[in-house]
Length: 423
Ligand code: UGA
Image (tube, rainbow, N blue to C red; front, side, top):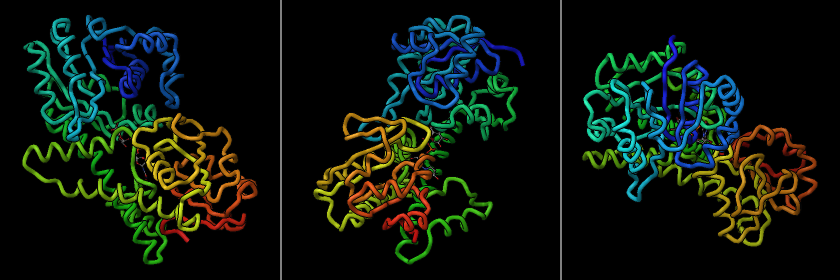
């Protein structure tokens, strides 16, 4: 595979992983950001985010000169054959994705783009954005392609190098094939399709996974009501290969920077095109309900009333492997507990917050606590010394919102163990 000249606009979690990943594949990458501090940090090899394995790869790419960082999009594009747009698409009040950063960058780079270069949109954007960007750039010698990212926070590096598939939405097959060459050394199916289809694949993928999770969470709630074991039921469901075992772990709900935003955006896209997408609507509603079910279980664990109760929370991040707390179900539940009058102390191995009473020792959350609650599935919570945890507490409540503590071990340590649909 020949080495290509690549520019990446935006060094957030997607841009940085893409830039570092492409540099590791042997391309020459220039990454641009508007934040001078970030550009300096990254040039020194320091990471603005926590993402396993990324810092090491960045260090290697800096050492061998295959990546560099510049201030401003305009400086990144001269000489680039491929320009990746990895910009934020924040949510507007109506649920739609706001494209001001994407369009501002496109206008900025338009006059500086190399002839015959390809602009590639990695951000999650409404259907029709590639076409609108093509019009905005307004150059016959530049094509715009949609190449949605499917990286997960916490395993972004692994996902970059071993993708399930690579989707390229191009205005013409030969354009798509040129983009596919960038990933030539990877062992992954490449699907070249239209820009509109690629843009919709991204939303369909996230909304489908969110719906699958809402279904799993709803089954857990029902299992609880009928006296069935939620994990056993979901295992039995997932062994049918048409369903698959992945993304069926029940929990306090799905959060993060993608599922909540993308499900709402898909609803908005559907509504504006005259279609009411009830299934996605229901998945969102079930996710909201899940916060209520878990909060209720915690209230029951402290005698039915939260007021003046001490509750220790293990986990703040929206999932393990990241310090990201955007739309974290843990945060939403903690706020409900505090609103109900409880005193809440929180431990997370990585995530931090000024809003809550945080401690850097997991056993500290148990001090004088009426109940301890697990809200993020960090592996270390499954390895806690339960006798020590229990000995620090005033009460005996243990609510496992992530199903990672062994119920028998918890009972042996003297806990009253609770998890939705687990006995
Ligand atoms: C998600 C998608 O999985 C990626 O494919 C996609 O690229 C990304 O959004 C994006 O659009 O950028 P991410 O938000 O990093 O990735 O997190 P996930 O691992 O998908 O988890 C989402 C939420 O579902 C978390 O709150 C997690 O705890 C929850 N979850 C996940 C469960 O409760 N149970 C599971 O079995 C899996």
